[in-house]
Length: 113
Length: 111
Image (cartoon, rainbow over all chains, first blue to last red; front, side, top):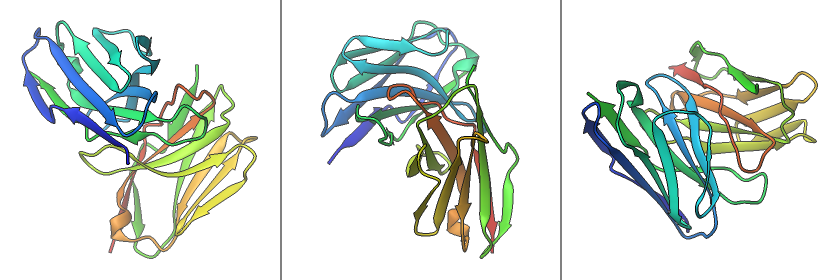
């Protein structure tokens, strides 16, 4: 069966510090991968998606970046965090064929102080 | 630009009644539309998918309709229970790569 992992589960970082969130998927190969952010009481905002190694599409211009160094690994990074980066970060994957649902990870709660 | 609208206000329903949630979209023609459930502090969980050539889809107490003319989907929970309380998200999409979600509707079922 497939599983998706995210870490860390919670993170408190000062403004201006770097960020690295990691997501890995097990039990499948060549998935589409996604990073979403959810601010408190708000909906899901698509940040990045990837259809393959090294292939990243950015949806929102901001101080975040994403990388996919391996088939089932997706990393979200920032060089300098802003207060507005606080939120709940969710990684998700789905099969490439159309019509299939997304499977979400447990999320990372990031608080920038 | 593509826009997805869901009731921003919370929906409060008496247990046993039918809850109906609305998802409207503009500026694109999705081939599929999905509904997810999200509990506080958790990632969304897939519930149902409906295709553009399907008018209605059912799963146990859940029913989804998809009207491509009105650009709207309705999500129904019949015989609602307090355990159905959660936020429900819709995700209409036409690209297999990019999936965007509505802001969600918070549903509260009171005993």
